[in-house]
Image (cartoon, rainbow, N blue to C red; front, side):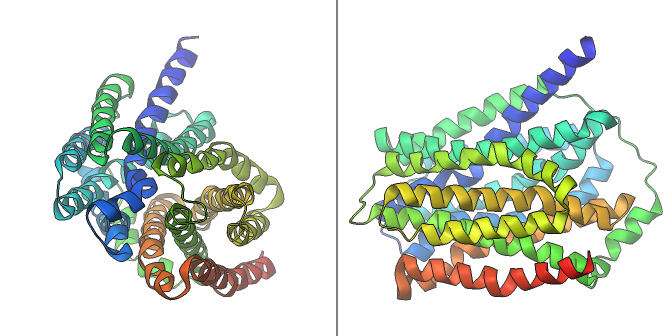
Length: 390
């Protein structure tokens, strides 16, 4: 009985902490049209609040690997969470675009201090037979946090202002810090790390030159690129006539992303039965169909489209890391997962940056066809190749 209570406490704390952290990544997305007006920015400048942060996240993530070997994991995560609280607090004080951008870059530096370490920490704190549960809780929390970040930001900015919005998220981070201190266990650090992990770390090229591994790294990169492009530019598209949605309505749109909480564990389970490659194929079909539906003139159809985009994106995110981990044994799997995160965030950063130029020429329809072309020409051939091999 005691063990079940402990696991429940750990799972609830984990869900809350991870949700709050992931909500801060996506806070500006629903209010981009408002920030664009407040600071008189171009779309490319406004999107830098998202893409700049994701880019920093990508660069900084691998730097935490050596730190995680020397220090106790919970200690690193708590320190990172404290500095993340300071950085988001700075956003609440920001009255200029430059200061807001600096605070977002700071967030990009400290978030990987939690996200890069949390994955292996989850595997450490759950007994072997419940690791699937731990991963499910983690993945569901990332989806839930992504929704709450956008939803609360839209509602708060509509009623108050963007500064109060960031203030609320700073407060939530402070509560998350206390929850982590009390609710998550410490892990004794195992300093006797084999030389194999150092060798494998130095040989990152072996992953990128492995054609199957590279294929699996490129899929989530392109998928996250498309996901970020569509969910970012749909806010500008729907803020214009004929839809003319306000911040609150734009924030509520992202409620559809709650599908991620359900889809993530289901996709993982079905990929065990159907096979990883087949599941990826279905996921991409859902993504492309969803992207095309967002071109509709009907808000209801656009919502269904966003739902399918969400199903596609989170199915890929549940299946790809597992597939990658299965290609590499033991310590090498950890490096593979780190690489996965780098490729993934690079895709997200580019997805808010590159389509800004496409938008200038072709509007929202241009962004849609650009993403469909990228997935169709860039990813579907890769999956067909994997199908032949598997």
